[in-house]
Amino acid sequence: MAKRIAIAACLTAAVAAPFLISGFHTFQLTQILVYAIALLGLNLLTGYSGQISLGHGAFFAIGAYVTAIMLDHAWLPYWATVPLAGLVCFAIGFAFGLPALRLEGPYLALATFALAIATPQILKHDKLESWTGGVQGIVLDKPEGPFTGLLDPDQWLYFVTLVAVIALYVAAWNLVRGRTGRALVAIRDHPLAAATMGIDTALYKTTTFGLSAMYTGVAGALGALLTGFVSPDSFTILVSINFLVGMVVGGVASIAGNFFGAAFIVILPNIAGDISDSAPWAIYGVILIVLMILMPRGIAGVVRAVAARRPST
Image (cartoon, rainbow, N blue to C red):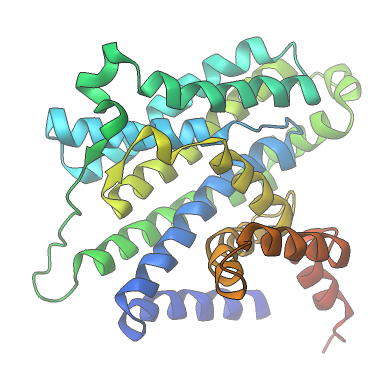
């Protein structure tokens, strides 16, 4: 009962938020929701199935470019490009996951790292420049809402992203709490025992890789609509590292923790810049080290520990 009340309160606050805060803070809040989707995708892969990825920034970029290209060249409606970006990233992630079955631990991490490094360079290639815009990228118009005068573009895109977050998080929650989730945890913790029990580890791993890429691709598509611009230099390896940092800070193998992690990677750089203009990343690093020492299981782990200590009524 308490969980339902908390969820209802969070949803109410989420719906009311864009009417109570400035346009810039609405943009930031939407960005947090976008990153929460990407972190959920990474958490499904790393937190639940145990496959380490340092390359999810590549799928984020692919999702963003699918949306940008479809809007710029195919003139599809913006809402149709988001699921299309997810499908394309699912196919690429599944295809990448097949050869990656032979890699584990740091070797898989290195392979995905190479993917993140290569993707921006591929997007800049001369033969793709007519589609991707090369180093100049593609400029997009923010979608207008159907209710003229009621919601501005930032508010409308916030609600579009919020609906996507709710749908994807409910789907992920049902996935990890069901038979598939138990199979993934078994593969993560005891792969040999899982295979002995009849779990098709190859199928589960590749499908999870594709599903994880799909979530991240959807996030990239929504991120492109939010910023109104995509370019290869926007998707450096730092994007992938930020996703990994956000997942760990929020809590590995935690659904709700992704929101904390997303807020961390969106807000903390601004705070670090306010503290020190000359060395913001040093401040960022110090804060991150302190958080990892104080909260080794992430923010979600602290929340769970506090909730467990509350006396039952």
